[in-house]
Length: 399
Image (cartoon, rainbow, N blue to C red; front, side):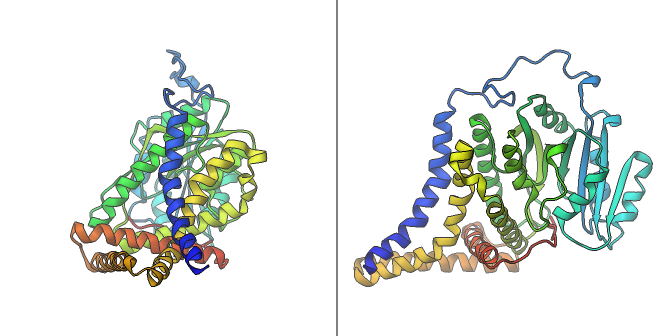
């Protein structure tokens, strides 16, 4: 009986990992072979109307930019947004200051003569609540949500908005590109590879029908779907795709809508970001759990479970797998070398994590350190979510 339990403990996270990270993308790839990434609802790309890019064809949009104590970067961010290739008379920019106390508001007010609007939240409530506070001021047909610490190339906005010419599209997400910051650590370079993998999966999901989560750094949504009543302690960017599906729309990833996302300046910050992001994601998934019902939501329910829930189960169950290996070795001494190997891997990861916190770790230590930090962060996020921890107060990632 104990051996059977131990086998289950070991097999569950291994199966979730294999399916979530390899099996699910493989199924999507096989199902979409030969298709182009399309946003017209037909599975193919239509010929572009030569006159479609005329000034009169672009809808009015509103860019919503929440910020908390971003005095160091807000001016550069606004300069880049004002320089985006989009008709200026159809692009509203609204900065929501989440009780900033470092002069962010004063800097934003200096841009008032260039059309930038400021909404101030007097008591800090978090990113989702800040976004909701801006909604009554937004006038565009499409709402573009972005972040004060990222960089959007001048030519990236039009491809994002062009996606909405397909009437089936309710949400369009940009393509994150992870770039090094001046204080980057070696271990965080692993993040770049993972981000690229994630964008590839989103491209496959777009071909298959819909993505299940948008990039919080750069995504757009039809204004009537961008509602203020969404709970403040949940993740609006993740939920946007779910809300779109609930209302009969799909969400797409737009490869041409590039967004440069600086990596966190330290592994400690990256760890805290992962805990916060995943805990909010788990709480959001529980809040929107109805969308996991395949009888009502068909393939979207399968995709949501595969991309989110099954992947996240890996991080809940991996400590039990380590215990399961130990139990099996107690019955079969031939497995002791495996126990030793697991112990060495965790020890090396711990040293790499510690070295990364103290400075720059060599690559052979940084990578296992990054992996262990991610695994521990995933388990910690589950504990926070299961414990009902509230994460309404926003902690921007200092990049």
